[in-house]
Length: 487
Image (cartoon, rainbow, N blue to C red):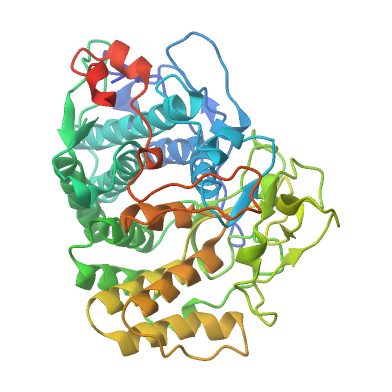
């Protein structure tokens, strides 16, 4: 493990939020204040301070991240900004969206996986640092004198955080899980790092996923429904996280359906209703949103970094970098409220023909991380695999009829029905999570680009281009990992 030594001799040098406030109309995280060296026994002596610690971790999701903590140079970049940057890097690796010659251009061209590149280093650094925060939280609570209810709740938060970020590492740094569950590329850490820590060897993917699933099952059991706001993880978010994991393992579709249904509330018709389409997709008070980044519009540190909005909005002063593949646009009926595509520039350059107005960029734009509509589609996919095709069609139609008043229920079955569900995932979630990349990877599908793209590159099924190499900085710092891991 690299230098994630945020604890030294029992002292925290983490950013701690001094206080947490809550608004009934919008949730927010106060700007964190650096307390550099607050003793661990103080942090875990009071529930409010523990909550502040957790709020500080969530705030780091939106921070400006150095892509390499070991080189002594502060070199944060727009495309290595936080969780949203990792998601957007996945988004531009597909066929549906086209990235202009701006930030994320190496991700778009699939030229980003070498061990010395900043995408590789940032993704490793970001996820392991949050994992270390989670381990600090879990261990600090275990050793504290706090009441059992507080320990239980915040330990569940720590486990959800740890599982979520191990899942990201497994997606980013390993091939398809079901191709070789014994492949070892990801070291596991369940204790906080110290100044004397030595890096662990890589563990088999089966062990990594066992930890992810165990942590999330504990979190689902122990997390409350209540939370300070939608920037925070609660039971429904943990259920959604585990449902996503089961989309990858593909070995418990019944549980995937159960979790997705619990996350969206059980009534698909009500769950999919959204006020964000056509309104900038920037407001997490929308009932469809389960989890998101809140932006307060006044004191955030990443005004010009927050993807997807800052990349995809061409009507506002921003990077204006992302375009829409004409053939993806043509998948939408004219009556579909999601068909927000404009021939804005009226130019003959094929890749610049269409933009989308789905995302409006402002300093206060919130960013979606999980929505009920996604969970309805997870349920539909699970029902298909359980052999319940009529229910899969009903769930799919619940979303389609809300988005398009002229929609009709599909009569497809077999592979054609699954293909339609996957297409609906792309139409519903484009720009948000990298869903096209995610689905191609877990189903061993190719990503073939149309000639309209600025860079035409075809990615075969199970290509090595679908995962990153282990960073050279990790190999250099960890005596239990050597260069052969990238062979």
